[in-house]
Each structure stands twice: as structure tokens, then as C-alpha cells.
Image (cartoon, rainbow, N blue to C red; front, side, top):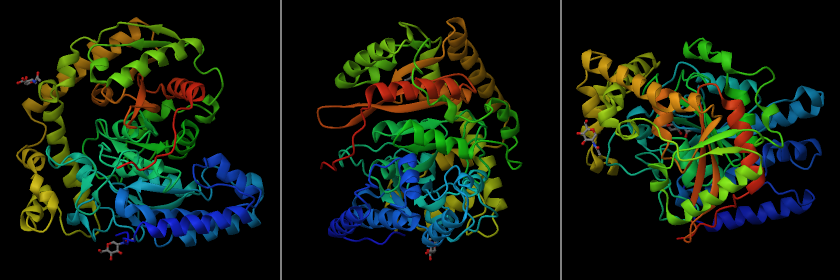
Length: 510
Ligand SMILES: *[C@@H]1O[C@H](CO)[C@@H](O)[C@H](O)[C@H]1NC(C)=O
Ligand SMILES: *[C@@H]1O[C@H](CO)[C@@H](O)[C@H](O)[C@H]1NC(C)=O
């Protein structure tokens, strides 16, 4: 666990940093992007060790309030020293990708090192994973430093309907760094909180239904929810192989794309990555970070019911942003409708809940069985663990209703098959048909309310910061598309971000 130090130590670390900054010709780590950090490395204004020390100082200072981080990697400084050494001895061109850049991982992403992988639950503490998650292996190959594990809604919000967003037994209550009393959303809450608050520049989250897009929206950061299978789910504590996906949460579209480039691709431990690898463009995704990305794009607007989910400030900003998108050269195709949208957004009626409950039990039991060692080996064990320690952990106040429903399932039977068929039909007749009929490149919606539509079809989406309401609470804008359309979504998201540049650092208002 992260040791809890008072806020004053943040002032202390800031002071140290200030002195460091002077000695480094005023290069500021706070808010720095990957390319900014890499330039500072190159110009010898910064080392990876200094970078890790800065981030660890910030975490020690503010995490007692924000609760964005569960564990810091005891080997992070060692990895930083190795990166600094490599930078000294290797040809500059040999250092690509994320070389020397620290990253935080949501605590449901396995690392075969000193860090625990627990989904925020004490039930998985001291479990030993067989290997790094597929995405972690790729991150290490790309030269990234594993800084630690980010907090989350316990079990990626699949334990109890009543548990608050961003809350876990191990992590405590994650806080929104813009307005501490406001919802950080979830379940990748710690990943979004941590990049927003400059605990790190880049992080990974996971999404089954909204868990990247919603906390990115709430914490004013960029989240990419990739097409299912584009990134490996092997070694990720699962909910559903049909909907789970791993993606970057960062402060800028460019940073998110650099991380995406590092983690996509085939992993023999996740069959879906073979099929989805056909979507990966030759030369990666960075080539789509170009000016004029909005030019000639056809963007659909479905007002009902998505505008209805937005606050007044948010819907006003949304209308203004549509103008910006038009000015960038996009065609706005307004007042569209998605067939059966109410049925799609009702997870009970659509069949999503039925499918997820059965898929969760099957895939979690497989994950637990594959662990080298673990205090729990089945969902039933986890439920028993929670019952046994019911009085010791505050999270138990919220029960484990989803776990109990999942435990009562018995594989993919008749009911589940019907649910899966219905989900496919809703997607085919709804989002997919609309996108094809109007030849749309993306659908634009305020906030994260569109997440279920993307979730049930395995579709990608990107959240970009889009404003703040009167109280300073952030909101974002979502660009969603058909499978494999990340290149277009990145062009649009980058075009919007560059035209608006709305994000500002948090001020930790009460
Ligand atoms: C992992 O959990 C064990 C048991 O609580 C703890 O001793 C260890 O410090 C944890 N690892 C890290 C990196 O925090
Ligand atoms: C969602 O669907 C279920 C099952 O069809 C139905 O009982 C429920 O009333 C629906 N909820 C809403 C808000 O429409």
C-alpha cells in the first residue's frame, strides 16, 4: 500500500522539484507530455530517475487525499536507472516508443513482479500471477517503466451495484481532483485521477462498459477504448471476453496514441488479438495525429436520449463544439436516431446483464485457476472471503449482489444464448445500420452516456475533455465508431483537441 503522508510533504516535494527545475533550465515535469519528456531526456535536462522521483513525491504528497494509486513499484527506480544507462550508451535512434517513461496500470492488469494484482480486493492479495499481462509485456518491450498500480472501483465495478465509483477495499475512495466531492466515475478511476493530478503522464485502464470513457470524461482526460481484441486481455482480471478491452488514459490525444501504439497487436494468450490485428495500420497510429484531421469527416449526432444526459453547461458547450467541428471541415449529420435505443441502454432488457453475469463466472474462474498461487480459486471462494471479512472491510456495507447473481449462473445456456443473439441484433439494426446508411466516420455524443452502445458491439470510442461547469466539474465529448476505425477516430479526436485545447490542470476544490 502507498504510505500515507500529510499534504505538507507534497509542498516539500514541490519545493525540491522547483529547485530541480531551476537547475534543469526550468523544464517542468508537471503537465509534460511524452514528447516533452523525451525531448528533455535528449537535451539532458531530465533523467528517468528524476522523473520517477518526482512522480513518487507527488503520489506520497497527494494520494492520501485522492487515492488514485494502490501500490508503487519498488523496482521503478531500478528500471529508471536502467533506462538512463541505456540512453547514455545507445544510439539515439535506438530509443523508441515509451523508453524511460513511467506508466501506472489499473490494478486488474497483471504484472509478474513485486506488485500485487488484486482488482482492489484483499481476496487477491498475495495471489501470484503466471506471467505479465499481454499489454504489460508489450509495455516493457517498448521501454516503459512500470510505476505502480492505479486504484479502481473494486472488481472493475462488477461486485455490487451499490458500491460507489472509485471505491475499493485496498484503495479506499478515489477522489475527483477537480472537485473532490464530485464523482470520479469508474471503474478505471485511479488511472484517470492519477494522470489528471500529474502522478504520472500516462496510464492504462480497462473497459467492459464505460470504465475507460466515463472516468476520462469525469476527470478531464483523454481515454481511448479500443476495438475489442485490438489489445490483449490475457492477464487482465476479466468480466467478459466479448466486451473487455484495455486502453490508454492520458492527458492528451498524442500521449494516448503513443501508448496505444505500444500495446496493440497479437498475443498468443488472447485469440481475439489475431482477428483484430487486421485493423492495425501499417506504421501504427501516430501517423493520424495530423492537422486537418476534421476535414471531410462525416459526424453523426443522435440527440435523443444522449443530449438529455448532459447538464446545461455541457449541452451548451456541445452545440458550440459542433460549430468547431464544422469549422474544421467536418459535415455534421444531425438529428439521427438509433433503432431500439431505449432497449440498448437497458442492460436488463437488452440481454447485456444476463450475458455478462455468465461470462464473468466462467472467465473469472479460469483466471483464478491459472494463478500460480492464490487465496481464492473460484468466484465462490471470493464470495466466501467477503462474507468472512464482512465486518472488517467497509466495502462489504455495499454487499456483493452482482457476485451472487453471477455465481447463480450455470454457463452459456438457453437464456444466455438468446441474450447474445439479441445483443447482436440490437447492434446490427441500431448503431451499425445507422453508421453505414449515413456513411458516418463517427458518432459524436456528450459525456460517456454512449458507452453501452459501443460496449455491446465491441466498438471503439475516444473521450476528449470538452469543458467545465460552473462548479468546475469537468465533462468530455465522445467520438465512437465501427470496429477498427481507430485511425479516423484519432484524426477527429486530435483535430477537436487541437482546435479547442480545453483541458486545464485540476485545482483540488473541496
Ligand atoms: C503486495 O502485498 C504484500 C502483502 O500485503 C505486501 O507485503 C507487498 O508490499 C505488496 N507489494 C507492493 C509492491 O506494495
Ligand atoms: C428494462 O427492461 C426490463 C426487462 O425487459 C424491464 O422490466 C424494465 O422495466 C426496463 N427498464 C426500463 C427503465 O425501461
